[in-house]
Amino acid sequence: MKGIYIFVGPPGAGKGTQASLFCKEAGIPHISTGEMLRAAMQEGTPLGQQVKQVVDSGALVSDELMIELIKQRTAAPDCSNGFLLDGFPRTIPQAESLEVFLTKSGLTLSKVLLFEISADILMERLAGRRADGARDDDKEETQRERLRVYEKSTAPLIAFYDARSQLGRVDANGDVETVQERVRELITGS
Ligand code: AMP
Image 1 (cartoon, rainbow, N blue to C red):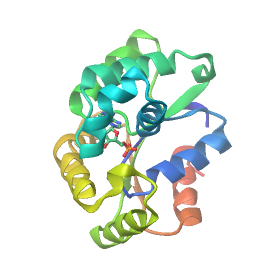
Image 2: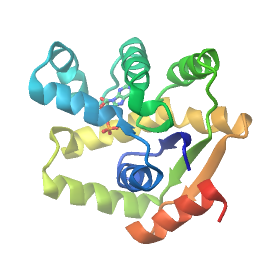
Image 3: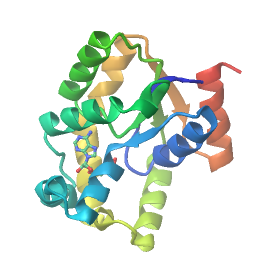
Image 4: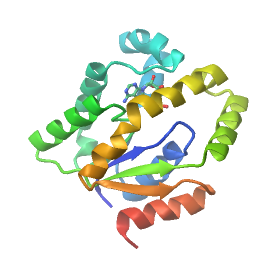
């Protein structure tokens, strides 16, 4: 299960949870760009200060900055056997840059998993996260903005990866174990 994977899906689809479980099993690093940005914001680093306003509004950080962040992170030694990208790419320019970068580095994308979830269940999960209050960008207005941004900027990635026969679709409705099993089946084919 070593390899390079991308998990895509709307906020609340459960891809972060599944990415974390899958990475533990596969022994590859879980690279969550959202987590990296939140850590930088919490530590108050120059990067954190630079992106805070954008992240808190639910908008996207610039492609240039995100691409640079991913290039640096994936160059670390722990990525030598593969890695999973969660939350990147999020736009077509990011996907195009990643494709060029991987090709230049002699690396091949193993699979892109799209987490598909019904609107009703998504709304329930997002309401649960609001009640949780763990993240500043989980306010109702910001969640709505992030969903809008997903539809506009990220959903076009589905056609991008489908056209390259790299896309697998995961039914993300269900409990964690059920979805975990579906992810495993899609990736290992067993
Ligand atoms: P996430 O934890 O993946 O939902 O990301 C939280 C926030 O971080 C997003 O709403 C964006 O503001 C920012 N972010 C994370 N990944 C990216 C990315 N690949 N491109 C642009 N902005 C991003």
